[in-house]
Image (tube, rainbow, N blue to C red; front, side, top):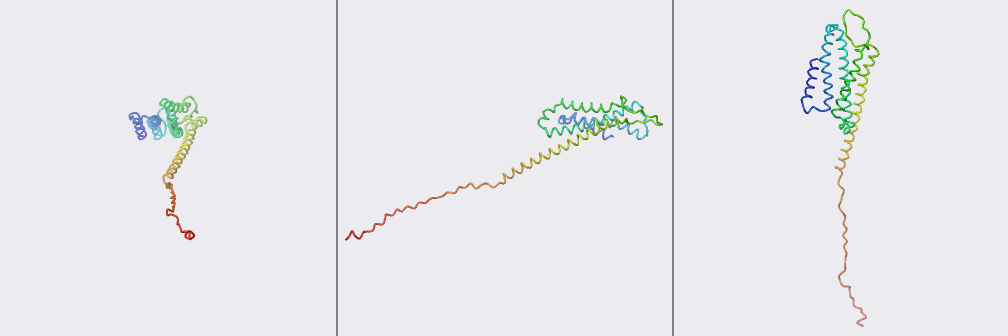
Length: 227
C-alpha cells in the first residue's frame, strides 16, 4: 500500500516538474498514476481495516461512497491502460497522421472520457441499482450484487477493455513484425548490391596489321630479248 502511494506520487511529481516529461503521451501515464495513487490512498486502508477486523465500522454512508469510489478508480485504472494501448497502436499504424492530431486538447478530452465512462459504471449503485441487504449481526460493506449491475460493471470495467487491449497489442505486434521484415528485406537487397562483383568493363581491341610488300617486283630478263 505504501509502495503504491509513494511510487505513483513520484510519477505524478516527475511528470509535473520535469519539462522533458511533459509530453502528451505521458499525460495518459499520469492519469493512470492518479487513479492508482487514489486506490492506494482512499480504498486500500479501509478495505484493509475491514479485513483485519472482520466487519465494517465506518458507517453505511461511507460504505456506499467507498464502494462507488472503488469501482470508479479501478475502472479508471483499467480504462487508462486501454487508452495507453490505443495511443501506442495509433502511433505505430498511423504515425504521421496521428501525431498531427494528438494535441493537448485531444489528450485532455480522451482522459476526461475515460473518467466519465468510469463514473457512469460506478454511480448506479448510489442511485439505487442494488439489492436490499439483510440485517446481520456485524455490519458489512460489499459491492452491489444485483445481477444486472454485475454484468454491466463487469463488461465496462474488465471484459471490454481487456478485449480491446488484447486486440490492439496483437495488431501492434503484427505491424511491428511486418515493418521489421521490410527492413530486413531492404538490408538484404542493399548487401547484395554492395557485394556484387563489378562487371569486366575492359574492351577488347583488335589490332590489324597490314603487311605491305615494299620490295620491287622481281624483274627477270626475258631470254628472247638477247636473241
